[in-house]
Image 1 (cartoon, rainbow, N blue to C red):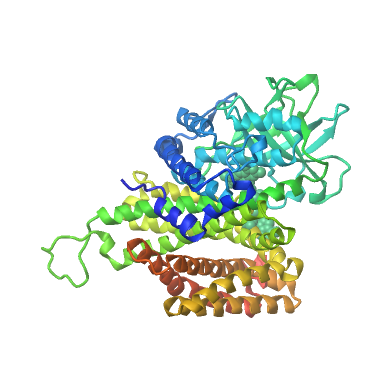
Image 2: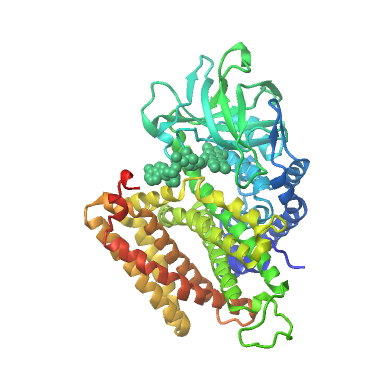
Length: 598
Ligand SMILES: Cc1cc2nc3c(=O)[nH]c(=O)nc-3n(C[C@H](O)[C@H](O)[C@H](O)COP(=O)(O)OP(=O)(O)OC[C@H]3O[C@@H](n4cnc5c(N)ncnc54)[C@H](O)[C@@H]3O)c2cc1C
C-alpha cells in the first residue's frame, strides 16, 4: 500500500532525476557514500517513521505531557520512537565522521527526516532540537564539551534544547535579560528565565543539554553582548557520569494549539531550588568566545530555518496525500451534466472543485519540497566547495533563499492543510481524521524561528540589499539559466519561461525603485507583501525546473508534474501582479494607519 506520509516516487524524482544528488559522491566529503547508501537511509527513515512515529501521533496529541510539580510525564511511545531513531544512528546523519557522524549529504538527511516530521512532528521535534544542538556544539564547543555532551546526545543517552527566547524577548533577542556571572574556575552561574523552550524537561533521557543565550555583565549592549552556554539539567563528571542536579528548573508547561506531544516550557535559571556545589545559580559552560553567542546561533540559523520549512512541507504533504485518498474513496453527488438521481454517486475526486483543491495542494507541497531539497543541496555544495569563490556564490544564493524556504512553506503548506480539511467536508472538522491536527501542528511554523514578519524584514532589509544586491543578482543568474534552457526547448516550457522572465524582471525593477525612492520606512512597511510575491516567483522557477526535469518523459507521474507546473503558472503566479503594483506604488496605507483609528 502506498504511504500517505510522503511520496517516495516524488522524493526519488527530486533527488535523482532533478538534483542528481548521487553526483555529490564525487566530492571528497561524500566519497564514502553511494546511491545505495542514500536509498538505504531513505528506506530506513520511512520504515522507522511508519512503525514508531506515526502510530502515536494522535495519542500524543490527545495526551499531552503533564507536570505534577516535580516530574513531567510523557506517553511511553515517544521514548520508544526516540530510542529507535538513535539506535539507528541517525542523530549524527550529516555530522563529520571524526565526531561520530555519518557525513551524509544534508539533502539526503532532510529528505529522510521529512518522513519523521510527516509521521509525528512533535516526537520528531525532540530529535530536531537535539540535532541542532549537537551540530552547533560540535562546531563551536571544546573537545571536553564534545566528549561530555555531544557524544552522549549522538548515542541517544542525552537530548538537547535551544533556549533563546524569554517572555519579553522573542523576535528581539537583543532584549534578553538572563545573565551569566563568571566564576573563578572558568565556569559561569546563570540567572534568569526562559520562555517557550521546546523539549526541555522530561524523563526520557538521562540528561538534557540546554544551549542557553545569556549576557555576561559588563558586555556590549544588544545582540553583541549575548553569549552562549551549555547548561545541562544534571552536571556531568570528568568521567562522563551524570551527577548533581543543576539549578535549571521547570516553572511550568505551555499548553499549545498544536504540536502538543512535545514539551514546551518556562524555565527558571538560578532560582535556588537546587544549589549545585552549594552555590546559587545554574552552572553554565561558555561555548566559544564571550559575546559571540548570536553569531554562533546564526551560523546554524540557516539550517534551522530550512528545517522549519521542511517541517511545514512534511505536514502539508501528508495532509495532501490523505485528502487525495479520501477524495478517491468518498462518493458524493453527480456530475453537473447528470440529471438522473438514480445514477450512482461519483467519488468526489471527479468534481472539478475537488481537483482544484488537490492540484493546489500538489503545487504547494511538491513545490515546497523541491525548494527545500534545492536549498539543502546548496548547503552540501557549500560544505564541500573546492574554492572560496564557489563557496561564496553558493552562500549568496542560499542566503536569499533561506527566508523564502522558511516562510513560503509555512504559509502555503498550511494553506494546503486547510484545503485538505475542506476536501474532507464535515469529517475534516472532526478529530476522527488526521487533517485537523496537521493544520494545528503546522500553524506554529510561521511563528517560531523568526516570525513571518521577521523573515520579510530579513529578506528585504538584509538579504536583498547585502553586498550591493549580490544575492539578488546570484538568484537572477540561477533563474536566468533555467529560463534560457526552457527557451531553447521551445513549446510550453518556453511559454512558461517568458512568463517567469517578465515577472522576475518586474520584481527586480520594483526592488530597485523601492530602494531608489530613499523612503526606507515606506519600502519596509510592505515587506510581507514583498516576501510573499518573492516567494511565489521563486516557487514558479522551481516548478519550471521540475517541468524541465520531466524531460519529455511520459507516464502519469510526469503528466501530473507538468499539470501542477501549469497550474502554478496559471492560477498562482499571476497573484503577484497586484502585490507588485502595491509595492511599486510604495503604498503607505498600513504605514499611515494610526492606533486610535482602530
Ligand atoms: C510552540 C513554540 C515553540 C517554541 N520553541 C522555542 C524554542 O525551543 N526555543 C526558543 O528559544 N524559542 C522557542 N519559541 C519562541 C519563538 O521563537 C517565539 O515565539 C518567536 O520568536 C516570536 O516571539 P514572541 O512570541 O515573543 O512574539 P513577538 O516577538 O512579541 O511578536 C509578536 C508579533 O509582533 C511582530 N513583530 C515583532 N517585532 C517586530 C518588528 N520589529 N517588526 C515587525 N513586526 C514585529 C511579530 O512578527 C509577531 O507577529 C517557541 C515558540 C512557540 C510558540
